Image (cartoon, rainbow, N blue to C red):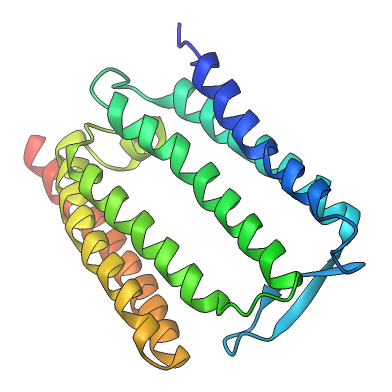
Amino acid sequence: MKKIDFKTLILTCVFCLLPILIGLWQYDALPEKVAIHFDINNNPDNYFNKALFVFGMPIFMAVLEAICSIVVDLTDKHKDANKKVTMVMKWMIPVILVVMYIITIAYNLGTKLDIRVWVMLLLGAMFIITGNYLPKTVGTNKWPQKKFTENVQRRINRIGGYVMMAYGALFMLSVFFPPLISVLVLVCLVIFLIILTIYGFSLDKKERKGNK
């Protein structure tokens, strides 16, 4: 029977809720409408009610983290082999979300911040860390195995890992160029993921034919 890592689950969820303390500390100083989303030119284009942002966002992050952690624990077929990888993934999402929460509060308090720069730097760090571990995974969960054989999954993970690290570097470098460059990098990433998926199905089809 699959076991849930409750210790990590509780720690990561509590970590997601900690920003509420920062929100309470700065609650009176925050505007009634908190900017939470920004366009490519760093202009806010979506807002949340202050109370909903301060309390609702951390709670949503904690619930999301709990669901992701439980799903990973229940579907990982090679839990022991992927222990470091899954631990990194479980902590990466909370850390990034909490950093963005703090940055959002700072922006709404009047601090001059280029949100695009922070988003690209965080995405870059996430992709480099994930890309470094991805080739080492054995077969992260059940659902890819229904589509790809384990051998093909390993090859896809290896290719994807190296490319993700490259894209992580590109995300970080894009902050030194106009915003359009960041958008182009994201578009190229989507195209790559589509190509990689098609390539995976092609390899899987060939391997299954060869095994018949």
